[in-house]
Image (cartoon, rainbow, N blue to C red; front, top):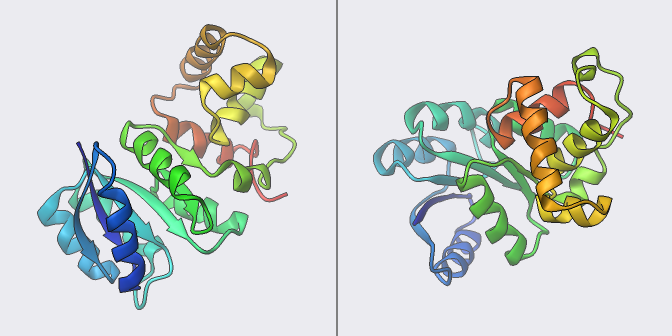
Length: 208
């Protein structure tokens, strides 16, 4: 069961999220918070599997809260949910330690899918938002990868599933799995979140 702490300064928004998530058989909202300070206290007490975090909070921002949340509840993954859709906002949240980023304009189905993926240890960036971040790569850190592996790395960092990548590149899911394994081994990465951060840090995705 995926236990979720909902953090947003708007009570109506929190209520709507809680009601929506309660419809899922594998997701359980376990608490709510309206400020970063409350979020840290409740995360310490509840140890949720996932913190659904608004970034624009009164007082201390969600960006500032992310490292504290990870510290007091090491098992928790942070999924940022924000009205901000600027590339710099995404990069700042992921660099602070968030495992994913979903804009508030996203559908409820996308949010639920993002929660499951982040809770499973993968990184996630809304594909439409991620498409705005694509830049040409030229980083020496990417030299160990083949052209195909760089392509797969970019698609993974943008949030596409192995099945979606297979359909886009006309290759089997097994082939995508193999490329992903080679990428992770060559770059010394272990999780999808690390892969996303690597792509951002090395210019594979970034402000267009």
